[in-house]
Length: 241
Image (cartoon, rainbow, N blue to C red; front, side, top):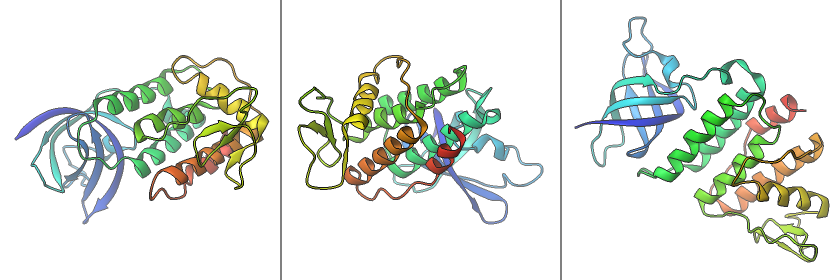
């Protein structure tokens, strides 16, 4: 049966000599795998460029319940990016966002709120004149809401150490290495304060920003079963420094 749906490309792999399998997070069906036959041939109806990571597409798909591979009839750009492919800072941030999504979203069912959030993030990144150098930090923290382990914002003068294992601020250093010290916790708290609006101008030195990103990824490892190491954040450390 044919369905129209919007989708965000997450990952593609080559299949056989001329085909690909695209993992797409769709508005109607959640994360689905689509076999696209013959796309790597010169006269293919659909072009491989459509299925670059984070591309936002308007799709007409065949959907069969309990099938591990679906098929696409039509695919068109819904929101062609104007700046992400040509701006190394934006493309590096997009690479990080895509890798984080790829490692955490596995649900094969619709999630309208999550889809809207991801679409809005991609559009915001593309349309921004100059994305803040901590755009990726805010994304990673906002994303935890949908994954079920949002940090608790209970920072205060008496609770100024963030415990990565427990997910909240506390009075003293815990008896394990998974925490942010007072200066790091202060900046972390300011990021949490700005998740629901346009973030204020927060000045974070490059070394501290990179360290907080590393700690956020540790937080993911502690709270998301099976979360493995990232690679794209190393690119960000270089590009945004």
